[in-house]
Image 1: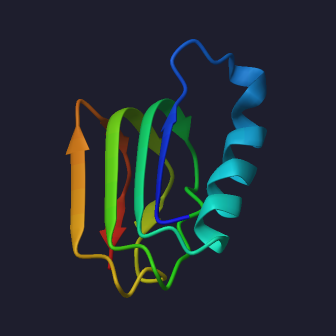
Image 2 (image 1 turned 45 degrees about the horizontal axis):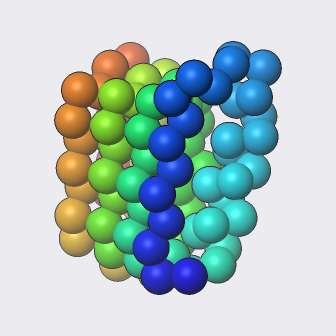
Image 3 (image 1 turned 60 degrees about the vertical axis):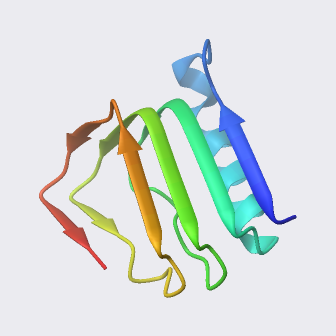
Length: 91
């Protein structure tokens, strides 16, 4: 899979754990482009040697750190209408 788009509009909070699994599975499938919308992510599971573009829309990031160091191929990070509750962004 080269590109994946996940739109979680209408998702209930109880499904948050499943979202983490879906994102990990997509990234383990060597996706190069990931677009995620309408979700709350705590400790985002962003580990990929192949991910080149990450787009987050209407997403709340809640963690101590957004660590993108495990995505060495990442060239484009687009964040639109996001809520960031982070102490640090690392790459």
